[in-house]
Every structure is written in structure tokens, then in C-alpha cells.
Length: 282
Length: 122
Image (cartoon, rainbow over all chains, first blue to last red; front, side, top):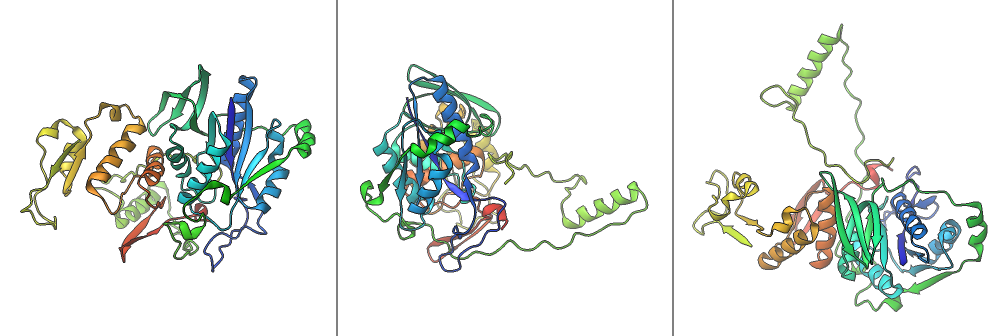
């Protein structure tokens, strides 16, 4: 089985971020980059499946510039089994729509039985790329997979939904995104790191992809108009109370003033949807 | 696909006006709940696969409704499945996509959105 994993380098979540006032995009040079945390789980899933399916290969695909190619060479060549990493060179920053079209063309050229994609990226976080890729490639898309069984060219996938778990069957080729419960991503083995230098990285250029519109921002329907740092939070109000009951009354009064209580004096509970990044430290 | 269209003589501005009622689709609980809102049209899928929480029929259905009605803007909740549906619809409908939107307004034939990026932290 040929497994392809898409990966992306993202700025270190803990690093100071800057936006370029001209291009209105994130400044990526000079910022420490890490493998997108969600992609680590996608890679782990691919490696687990390769172990279970002898004769399978894992190809890592990265959409990025020449500089990124050199950087990724250092970072995750160890995961490969004689298969090259493929990378696209791109001219300008792309938004997710154009990016996923370009990626889908490249992935169609590479060919795969199973495409594993991180559910989100840590920088753009639209979460739209997996779905768009599946649409462009005309393959089934199963997201947030936590367990996968393969038999007779078919996957049985247990996935997380908004309300619980669901098991779906899907024929190959298919696209899978991994849940953060799939398994803890492994560290590179010493042997893997030593053998990494011998592996080559193949590259596709944008011209190979037969696209009818530019890949960069000029082909995008979404334009970044402006950006601003989040508004600074003011200092909270400190309530000094003699005892717990007085403190509770003060808090109750505060909530009532804000209109956070309903007619019965109960807090309006806001249902916050569970997000795939709920367990990450982002 | 079943649509309940608001009678033509109703004012387009809904404030303080009667809300649409349901007849044929009244069995659908969600549609009934939606009837309490000042909506012009509610589309109800009669495809039972949608009830099985499969996303393919949802994407197909919304795409079909979009093709029929030609909306300028599709708003999709930011749930796990909403994200999936949004990504797929944006590719299928060749529409631009903005995620995690907290505010938006329409200006000059475009929609201007505000969304937190980098976990609103940099």
C-alpha cells in the first residue's frame, strides 16, 4: 500500500510571531519552524499502518519553497523507506483554496492508496485543506480518525464526531485525517537519523501541475485586508470580601450587571464546540 | 428536497412579522424549531442518510441547495463536522473560505471577516 502523508512546517507555537505589514502574511524567515503538530499524528498513523501492512511505503509530501525543502530534509527524512519526499516549489504565499488545488494536482501525479493529512495547521488553522483536497481528488474523506483497520482494500475507521465516535467503512484510495488520540507521535530512531542523509528529495515545480490560475495570492479569492494584534486585556476587577458568602454575592452581582444571568438567576451556559485542537498546547 | 417559501406578499423585512409555518415538513423537529425564527425559507433534507451523521450526503445536499438558490454567502457552524463540510463545499462551489470568523460585514460586493489567527497570540 502506498501511503502519502502531507506535512507542513509552521512557526514554533512558542516563538514570537510577526506579520509583514506589506504582504500581511506571517514572517517566516528567522522564526524557528517546527513540524505542524497535527502532521506529527498523521505521520505516526502512516508509520503504524506501514508496520501492520508489510510492503507498504510512506511518502512525505510538503508544499513549500526551496528553502523549506532544505529545512525539511534535515527534519523528517528519517521516516521514509527508500521513497523520496516530494515538495512543490511555489512563488508566493497561497491561501488554502489555491493551495489545496495545487496540492491535489501534485498528489494525483504522485499517486497513492491512502492519503493522510493533519486535520489542521497550527498557523492558518482553517481546517479546510483536507476537505478541499478530497473534493479535488474525487476521493472519500474521513476526518478525525482515531483507529483504522484495513482489509480487502477497504478501511474501517473509527472517527470522532461532534457527539461521540462513529465507525465508517471506506474504499481505497481515500483521504484520512488523524485525531490527536490516534497515538503519541514517536521520536526518530538513531538508525533512522543516521540513514536519513542517504535519502533524496524529489521536487515538483508549479509548472508541472497544469494549473489554469496562479498558485499565489493573485489566484486567491480571499485577500487579507488588515491585521491587528489582539486587544490587550485590562486588569480584572479584584473583589475583596470578608467571607465566601459575601464574595459569592459580589460575583453574582457582577454577572447580573453584565447580563450573563438568565431570568432564573442562572448563568447562561455557552456551549462551546469541541475542537480538534482541544488537547494541544496551542 | 423540500422548500417552504415565504408568501410573496409578506414584507421582505421580517421584524415583527409572522414567522413561516410548516405543513408537510412539520414532522421534522428541527424544522419546527427553526420556524420560530424569522427565516424566509427553510430547506429540509428528506434523505435519511443525513440522519446517519454521514457527511457526504450533507455536502451533496447543501451543494444542491446552493446550486438551486445561488446564495451570496454560506454560513457554516464551526463544529468538527462544520469544518469538514466547509472545506469540501468551498472546493466544490469554487468559493472563497474564511474560517473561525468572529465578526463580518458586507461591503462592496465582498464580505469582510475578522478571525483570530495564531490562536490570537503573537
